[in-house]
Length: 462
Ligand code: ARG
Image (cartoon, rainbow, N blue to C red):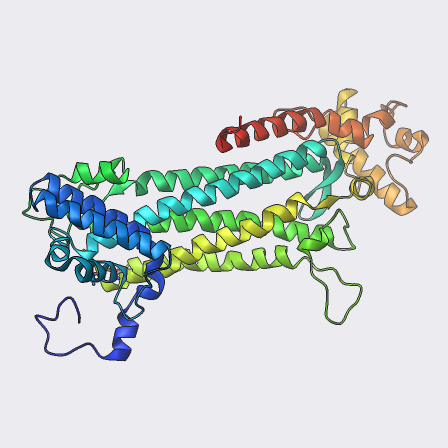
């Protein structure tokens, strides 16, 4: 029997009921729905809107339903229209008329707006923990490889020398900002909408601040239409998740390249790689590829939410039921990706000799060679030109700047001296890049330690 059976002559068509129902996906908010109802019932009692005794009965009944659900003694009825209807129906089945008082001064519109906020706040805490865990892993790996020279790239062309630790810490910075973006989203989500009711508030003298306090919210919504009609908090979270997924995707792309025989900078642990059904030699970075692929879902979820909202008049519209599958998918996608990605990176074997060998090719010390001449008083443009000619000569002769004889240097520019070889040694080139934020091993070590310190503070282990 539907909630609105009084107004209607017929039951809803079965297939239409299935189409209309959200129980298949909103039952994951059962706990938050029950806790929200308990706070509402307690507030109704405290305000004298229902008898104190009935308020207590409602809370006890709801508590039992929660316990029964969590212990598997109560199954959610898949025929119910949504989780709100199911819980209220079950309560009334257990408490009779008292159960029917729960929905006083409330609508499913403010109820769902509440449940979703509570549920996503909890999910954000879990995602944040996972991101911090990844940052910690990156800090540890960066510390271990703070002095391993590798080529830094632009346009995927070898450009200038950096260290592997420096490269990893770039991602650590991104994931730290992603954690910050989750915090920002939670801050604006942390506003309690109950009391907005269907759209126009209520004539009952509710104490909304009390409900907010009972549920651990920092504030209450200030406009009843806004309280039930916006899902900007889902959009903000989906955007934060999509961006975290894009960061994971870029990192995955690099890991995939690094695993190839063309690079061979790293090797993934067998536990995080797969083989081929036909090619016996293959070891594939499937996990990284799947993470890269799944970033598309998260971007799709964000797009779905924005598109769902864009034409909606105030206040609630049923279109908004579509918010849950999109945001839950985004949450679950990031959660699953981090669960697989973090140990994959943690167990990834770095091959420093291959990093160093790649750094030796590609003239990545050419800028340093030009800077050497600048140090001898040559204007940068002239130094750049002379070095360019030296590189061209090396390419013609199949040698490197390190192996080119001093005569060849001097023929290009008389300011070159024996000390040029020290100036262009890759180790020196990296060590001297001590500018704040630069890749010198000492910088990377200090930055890795600061990163680990941050992670420890977030994890409460500092
Ligand atoms: N299942 C609905 C949703 O997710 C709950 C709110 C229903 N409200 C309504 N007026 N039909 O949006």
